[in-house]
Image (cartoon, rainbow, N blue to C red):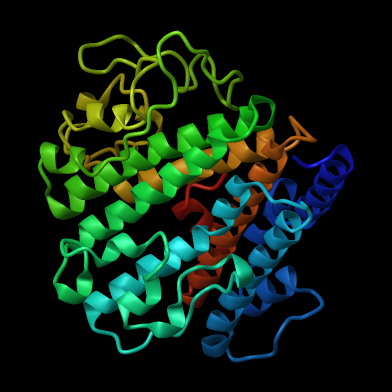
Length: 371
């Protein structure tokens, strides 16, 4: 386990990077940007590029991702023996790139030119695309070669994506549980919330976009059991919890109970499967109700997975920002740092894409439910 001096260095370095990031109090500057070139100068004041907007957008997106990965690597590499949890968080990009390569395979694209270079921490051989076996042989993703999932042989694309998500979060949870309790108090709460809410998003998407039945959706959810009866729950409250916030205790109406201590983190999502997608009153009292899109006067209501996902992203960002300095010399700090930098990358990329389409930064903020 890392020593006190190493942890103090990581904390100081992480605080310095976050202080210069476009997060928290610095977000209003991002909301005022109206052109891609201005966004480039804001993010990279010493290294902006003079390029036509059509060329600037992909170049800027690559640099945004490269900067986020580089900053996270600088923190992870500060540990003489980096905790597995942090390495797996870093490999979020590898999972995303692997999903993108699977989609490219299904579409018949002859090349897959862009992926995030994680150096020694990467495992998938993306240069071997479109040879899936050469890409994943000998890695933890070798299960994608199974007949039912192998997209080169007509496998189920949705099932392959689902299995990747399940493996990613299950491996994160296992890595987290290897840490001493004092090192994961905050991380456990945030990751538990994230998995539960990702299940809810996945359930909404599968029902809305693919018309799947309750049974079909249920078997695709991530069953992770964080607490068993008689064991303590993660202490602490997230920002916004309390009376009238929608994050507090849930009314005990039929079919809408809050999950028990020995429930799966898929419990909230499974409860939602009984609610009609076109009836807002049907969702009243659900534990995750606050993330649903509001009813608009004179317009029929339908559950919107994109709105739900954006609301969840904003909530998880605020939870990580609120928790970043709570336990300064624990692994929790590095966990929150990585999640904050990943959120910043997503936000900056979204703003860049919006500006490229002629939107304003404020329009993108509104679309993403950023407050």
